[in-house]
Structures are given as C-alpha cells and as structure tokens.
Length: 540
Image 1 (tube, rainbow, N blue to C red):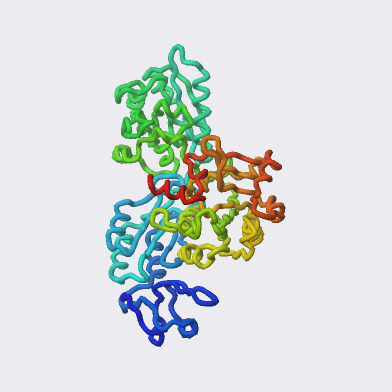
Image 2 (image 1 turned 90 degrees about the horizontal axis):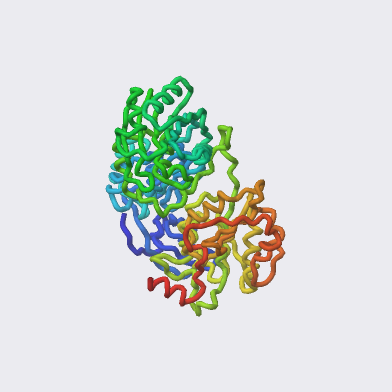
C-alpha cells in the first residue's frame, strides 16, 4: 500500500486518505472514490487528493478485520459488521469470558497494523456486552501478515469464547464451635445463597456440625449420594494449613487437596479440593461477607464449568489485590428459578454536542484535546463500549468538525438548527429521533469525558420500571452527577422543554421513581466547562 497525492483524473477507484469537506456533504476518509466523487471534488475546486493505493497483495481493512474476528471468535461470541477497519465481538449469552492469552499475544505480535483488544479474562459478561474489538489501523494489510494471524487463530480455536453459567446444586457444610452464634451461620447461608442466585444456582442441602475432622468427614459422606454439583465448606475457624480440620476431613473421605491458599486478598485462605469427582471449596472467612473476594473468582469458574488447577490459582496474583474493590459489576443474570435470561431493555444514548461553549472563548471545547484525542471522542468511545442499542449525537455549532472527530464510530447524527436558543432545543432534537421501541434514554453531555463505560453499565443494569427504578441517577460520595437514564414515559414531557434548561425539574416531580446509583469514581461530577478546568486536568 502506498500513500501519495495524485491528480483528480487518476483518482477514480483510489482510497481517500483523509476526509474532505465539500459544499453539500463530507467525503470520509477510506472512501473508494467513484467517478461521481471525482467530479464532485473537481466542482468543489480540488485538483488533487491524497490517496492510499493498494497493491495486488493487500487486503482491504474491513475484509481483513472481519476475517480475523471470525477466526478468533469462539463459542457464544457474535461477530459484528466491520466498519472503517473495526470489527467488534459481543457476548451472545451471559457467562464467563475465557481468553487464550498466549495465542492472543501471538496475533498482536505479528504486525503493528493488526490489533486485538479485549476485556480482562475470567470476568462475568452479560448478553450483548462488547468483549473485544479487532482494528486494522491502515486501509489495508498485506495478505501474508493476515494469513499469519489466521494460522495462529486456526491452530488455537476459540481464542475468545464465553463459557455459559450453568445452574448448580450445592451442598453446604458449616462447622461450629462453642460460643459461635447461630446468627453468624444463618447470615453465612444467606450470603452464599445470594451469591448462587446470580447464576440460578442454589443450596440443595446444608449440614451443620462440630468443628472436628471426623464430624466434617461424616457430613461429607452424608452428602455423597445427593444430586450435588459442588460441595462448599465453611469452617468455624480459618484453615491454617493442609493438615487442619477441613482439609483433613476431605482426605479422610478419600478426596484430595488441589490447592490451599491463593495470591488474592481478600481470599488468601481459600481451599480447593476434589471428592467423588466433585469440586470441594473451603470458604475463606471473608466470604461470609457479600463483598467481592477470591472465593468469587473461583466460584465463577466452577459454575461456568471452567476447570481450576493449582497452577491457575497461583497465577491469580496479578490484579489479585482486591481490598479497594467493594463489588464487581455483575451481568444481567438468569432469573431465579428459571433457565432463561432476563429481558434486556432497549436503551439509547443521546450526546448533546451542539453548544457554543461561550465560557471557553473562541475555541470549541468539545474539540479540545484530552489525552491525545478530542474531548467529544472520549464520550463517544465510552458509549460505544457499552451495550447500547443506539447512540445519537446532536450537533449544531461547528457540526462538521464534530462529525469529523467522530467519523470512526457507529453513531447517528441529528442536526439542531436552533442550538443558539439553548440546551433544551438540543435535548428535544435528540428525543424526537429516538426509536419507538426504545425503553429508556441516557442523556449524556459532550463535555464529560471522565465518565466510564462501567458507569454507563451500572446505570443500565439499575433500570427496572417494574421495581420503581425509572430514573437512574449516578452518585459519587452522595453527590448527584451525570449522565441520567430516563424511562421512555418521560419523553413527552421533556419534549415540551424550552430555553436553556434541562429536565432537572422532573427529578423533583417524580422523586418516587428516582433511583440513585452509587459510582466508584468522581468522573460523573466532572464537566470541562471552563479553560481552568482543562488546565487543571493537564497540570495533574
């Protein structure tokens, strides 16, 4: 592939290297120039253009991205249409994300022009969640390089897959000692039940016995003939080593200890064993709490039928310090008592990007660079990584520049010719274009680049009109922020807005259905409204 400037009479069928603004439209980079395109360029005063010219051995970006994505995608992974050299992979069902890291690294090492980015492995994902993206950086790649990647993928098979969560019946043994309150045992049972309910699993039978190896062994044998998938044991005191009460009981019964301890905190004192072809999990004391810990990491894998070895546990140290993680965002799991998924709501995001940003002086703040890309692109990228049905961008002031900054994303643009009349006009323009099947909308501000895709996911997961959660409001340390998710039933009222105001008054009018969603970072409070805000950010 060669980049060079050529005269218009040579440009037909060449690939446009950079976007060009014409009088009536924008000609996007990557366009294969037709005869009509060339004639229009000439009418607009162009005499030459910068183009990419492919050789006979080059594979166009979209074809290369789709081929590589299709070969990488394994079970329960959907491959989307390739656009501008990008092909996304999404989970077709809730489950555990499993990635062959060695093979993935081999593909990313082939050539800088081909990249595969994924979520971290062994995390729960929900149906429709973006789990990986394949991006061809130039307009084409050499066929030899692509074939090298495809060969790696074919040899590995299922480099990226989703292991579905399969309902499990669990046997639960709790030991007790003098002075241990029954209320503690009851709470432990409740917390474990709540953990299992996320996966439509349950405690089939529970036995409580004295904290003694023989008594625990007796309880294990009692559960042997029950129809159980996993056995979990919670000791009255923490396991100290492989010869302590709980591991000794497992070996007395003829079972084996796979591993004791793990480089994860909290969760260090986890015990993993085998008995009668079933996994046995010794709960660390921290698992009496619902907070995310090492026990969850192993339990997730077992419920997804992903084997866990001693070596697997010993390699969990990277990222194993969990003390600051209050909880792990969970996918939209199976309904309790049913084998089907909860119905996924159709949610649309609207980015308000039409304002003139007077407080920034002459410069459009949405086009200012934040960490090497325009501010508005941060917002679009965050939403693009979320499981949204559609993303609408409302433009007005410097609309073509905004569109140009976002031309690599799958977005729908709506023009607001009345943007000078205030915020409400942009909000109304966006709401009027929302699909009739949409259940809710998330109103996003173009000057809030610090909001994360995890924040958006939390808002979407919180939305549940049947339970009275019709307006979902993010909060950080008790302070309310943005963006806000609104049920469709409020759209008609918002369409009546006028002037430079938003829908804040509706929060008070419908306070009974406002649900506050605690967010882990302060990005929901930070808008880049002034030059000082941006200067302070760059000075950090």
